[in-house]
Length: 375
Image 1 (cartoon, rainbow, N blue to C red):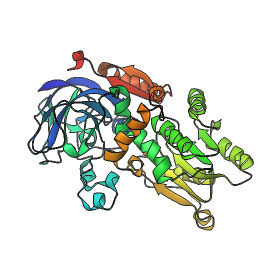
Image 2: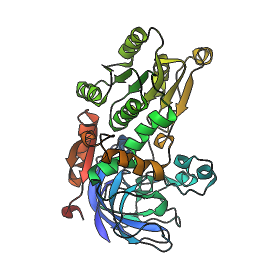
Image 3: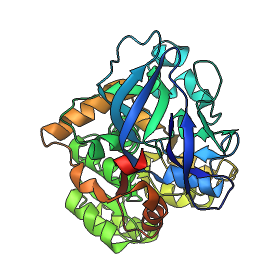
Image 4: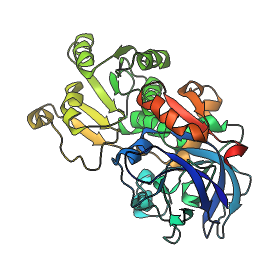
């Protein structure tokens, strides 16, 4: 079938809306009519080259929600008409990583940047007669997609698509970074560095986990205001300001848990993140840096003597097939604020405006809402 999609053909170029052709689902695959897609910072890393796919053109997007319109052979637990969220990491439940309880590290994730299908290693999307590489095997910057069943999570049909898509990456990643990876305990002091969609989700996780002081850090005044509304106790422009204030407020104890959710992680900033981390504390790096950046600056003696932990995490350390419906059930009963995280909605042809707004700090999360004009 033919549709539209947002593509990039080389680094540092704007998204282009072009006609694409999407194949039919094969064995263990599902075709989804997408209704909404989140605009995550990770897709901007595709533009800059920080996350290089295996080739061009690239079809962006990895936060999507919609309705199943076709299923392939062998698909058992998903039916036409189901409302679903797409998980940006497939989770098969059978590989050694999944069996060990690390479903966010499913072995199928090794194919995420290859752009070829899990089922048979072929391509499902073409443009201008060329194979297209969809972001994390999804490509949600198009109103239709064909994905492997391990990336599909059924949800309650009462959930609005524009909030459901958020749990395909940002909300699950941020919330899980707080409650799983950082394992925030009641009464602990916490710092959240970076207040986009992932950071605000981590902030909500810290509030729910019972954090005492929550130090939110972001250079954008509006985002700091939003953080206070979402439950932060203090907000600062820079990590240096936050470190000095945290030392005073905690009588030198600092933040037992630190979660880094900046838009672009840089190795030169690691020591400042550890500087606000308490002795015996944990600094969780959720933010993505460039795959080409292999240098980090930190005081190794202080890391050892203060027994600090520096930990990476992906998808919040959780199980997408459990966490996605679980977080949406919290939303349904008013325990998780997703509505106020959706700052603006855009048409597909406004995608470059949406990313400009993101880079200039105007959005917590921008959403592409698909219409018949896109299909």
